Length: 266
Image 1 (cartoon, rainbow, N blue to C red):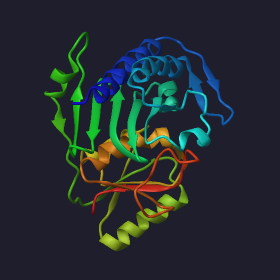
Image 2 (image 1 turned 90 degrees about the horizontal axis):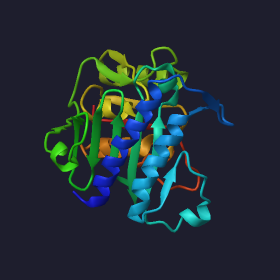
Image 3 (image 1 turned 135 degrees about the horizontal axis):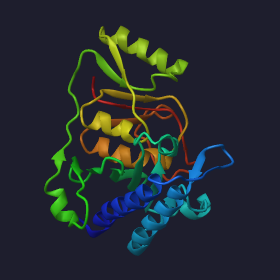
């Protein structure tokens, strides 16, 4: 595997260690201007990731870095997109459903993604170039990333299921999502089960065949979705922007995503 991809994997695991060091303590929670939570774990994880990715000479977009104006970003052919701690609300609740997200973008398309789940020590990797995605449990202590990846299990999405398993929230299903669920029932003449999960793990559920579709009718940012999109795309899934009805693109002028669907052929 290319050295830059290996660095991204190692960065995610080391960032996860920094996150867990804080997770085990009592920690303060601040709030950003948009009322989203921010903890020391977000900031410490970002420092770790930057120390790895800055050596690649590829520019970086991170949720925790100062925003870079599009007049500068628009000339980037490749870039990293990073969420050092996706699911800070889940982190604060201490339910374990938070992740480290790192994606490599080329010509606005997500071509490589890493999602690490620090509380479970589970690593997901997707490489669109080789059309492979896999997951592996990360051991405690020192290890070699190449050796670790040889133990990984390939991901395989579901071909069909009855009931159709839809990724969503059990407690906060908005009307657009409810309408989509009814449309699925009418179109496929099957019942629907709702599968709930925090952070970018929603993408992983579909990629590993634990769910069939992830309809997103709520705001997300590019760093919430870029890594998950690569993991899904590498196993043949589609992540479709409902604004364009085409593959969702990255390093856009506005980093706020529109609504999208992640799905198999159903």
